[in-house]
Length: 149
Image (cartoon, rainbow, N blue to C red; front, side, top):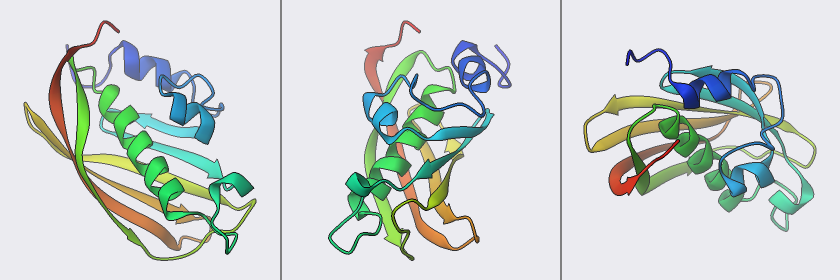
């Protein structure tokens, strides 16, 4: 199989511009982003900051930002079409700016290096004005769970 397409990536490509309510991830369905880009090794989605995603200061909670990044990166790795599932080993995040309730932010996930057992990725959440809300680096490792999809 070439690295430009596979059934999982094709599914995501067909969802560009639509809500992620059909995400294979239950957390992804709750986050409910709108997919903007679906390429091999790269995904981007818009998310509206809802009240239940905020902290007492009424800005995007660090845990919600981490969830957005981890989930989008996981979905992107899933869309690589590999035979086995991958899981996060670590997730290092820098929180650089705030995003308030009802603001739209764009999250991007990209593969930096895809080894046989470990995939290194980076993610970023940007405000519409380009300010970086959060950025991360993560490593995912192949599990023994064979995927049927």
